[in-house]
Length: 83
Image 1 (cartoon, helix red, strand yellow):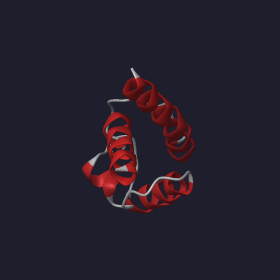
Image 2 (cartoon, rainbow, N blue to C red; image 1 turned 135 degrees about the horizontal axis):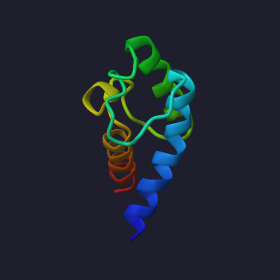
Image 3 (cartoon, rainbow, N blue to C red; image 1 turned 60 degrees about the horizontal axis):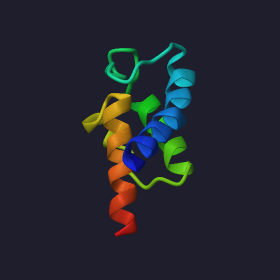
């Protein structure tokens, strides 16, 4: 249950950053680049996300271009850092 809670918390943290950047509502499964994200915008948002205490390469959004996939990568990076 803790994983699901942490996952939902991360999605709720990153969703507003992306929605603000893209000026559109975002669901968890839509590719951010299909909604208009580009490399500069992606780098800007990833800097904001890492500013929240995460340590994920700025390019991670290219490998994980949906909120769910990005949240999973962020959660995994937190788990690895704690180990």
